[in-house]
Length: 384
Image 1: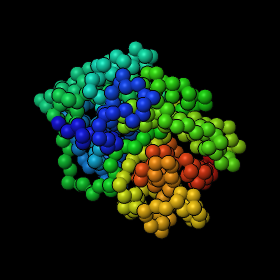
Image 2: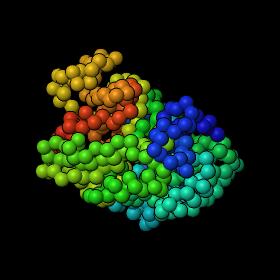
Image 3: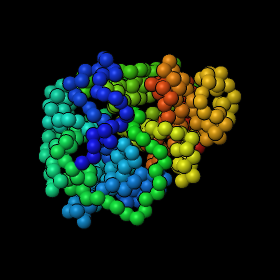
Image 4: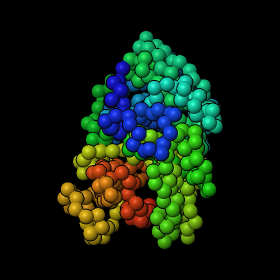
């Protein structure tokens, strides 16, 4: 079995509550995995291995007795991705693909008790995706349950204390010869959900009342706006701070915001981006660019007065300027971040690379530069 400490999303020394306002009736140990429904799991797996440095872990398909779907499981440090494709026409997987294109279906949370997690959330109003079920094989058993969240996204509760297999029952180890080196990704820092007009507070209330989360920070259209587009956002966190879900909704602007564009093409609410942490963003971004990952363009003028705004940093500014890495500071320290262009065909899901040097925030000072960069991409697509 994977040792518990190896599964944590964000390193902490203990489980003491670091977000005092959160109510920990739902203990969450970390992000277990993220499942994406994709049009071709084999080719998607190759992309995440070759471009992103994920390592092959497990496989489920016809060879393992799975007749309706195939899944490839990839891991890099504490990040586990599951890429799933339907093998037959019809059914929920094809419906998800037809409506959304490639995108996140399940954000699976590692818990000590999947039955209790299901009971606590459903009695507080969560809609069940599926009731607790035991899956087992020669390596032990796993208890799974799931609830619905915004759009077609679900949270799966995974209890794996009594399992010693490679991933989950029904999967077998996958050990191909092709194993490009990792790029230094460590864990999922946060995952951002886009919801429709007027829905942000509804889903923040859901995370507060149903899952015991607390609001860390909020941004309104005065914080997050340009001449053209605007949005509002609130960041929800569980008590130990390992699970952080910013929730975005559109705000009125002169033109179509990035949130509206996402919702139009995803056809509803969903996971907008996954923020993955690194200890060396220059090395990580350099490797990703060399492997073909495309990032948003940041004008060179951004760096003209950046140190006046953020103060002294440990890094040499020139490599950050060359790579287009953004910098921001809060009361706790500073952070370095950069955003990819969409990694799927529709202008929907993308990734954020983040390195925290003490900062607990989410780069508020970079919002204007970031959104102007997104608007340039929207303009090129004709969707601004």
